[in-house]
Every structure is written in structure tokens, then in C-alpha cells.
Length: 137
Image 1 (cartoon, rainbow, N blue to C red):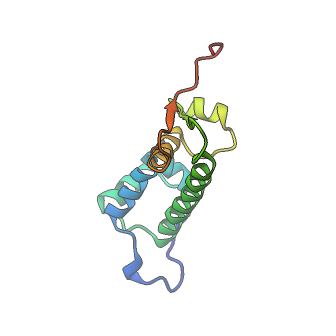
Image 2: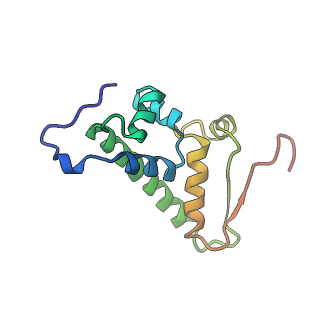
């Protein structure tokens, strides 16, 4: 995918290399996953984070979209969990385990764990656990 600046996008709204990395890490996304999602090489993502290449505004918009969708997901989970007795969620050790349980989700297990950490800040007493190994209660 080719990312170019949308017409009329002011230069002062360009995402910095530091902002890009902070947002990526806050979302729990690896550089490799993000590269695949954006349709660029992992090297390009590394170069954006190192300040070697300017980050196209189309990428900033894509990151803002991921942030928006993540925020909506967190809000929905918090709404469901707040006020219920003994709230709990499962997190997953790896992408294979996560996608086996949630094939509809495009994000990696690291994103899910980061999301759960943010949910835990808003849901008192949230119990976080891994799923039981197959065949065990």
C-alpha cells in the first residue's frame, strides 16, 4: 500500500517518530504486525521510528483509526464489566491462542493484553487469567 499525504494536510500535523513509536507501543503492537497491517516492510516501520523517513499523514490517520477502534473496544468492555461481581477476563499467551479463541479479531495477542491492562485501570478488582490448557477446568 502506498501512503501519501492527503491533499491540504498541514505540515505541522505530521506525526513525529517519537509519537509513532509511543502510540504503537501503547497499543501493544509490534513493528512487524504494524508493518503487515499497513502493507509496508518492517524496515520502513523501523525507519519511521528512527526518524529516517517522515511518517506519511496517511499512516498517522491509520494509527488514529486503530486508536479510535481500540478506545471503543475498551469502552465497551469497561461498560460490561463495571458493577458485576468478580469481573474477570482472559488474556492469551500468543497470537495462535488468541486467534483460535477470537478468529474475528485482526489484532495480535499483544494488543489484547495491552487493552486488558487499560481496562484493569477502570474496573476495580478485575481478575486477569490465561485460559486453562485444553481439557482442564
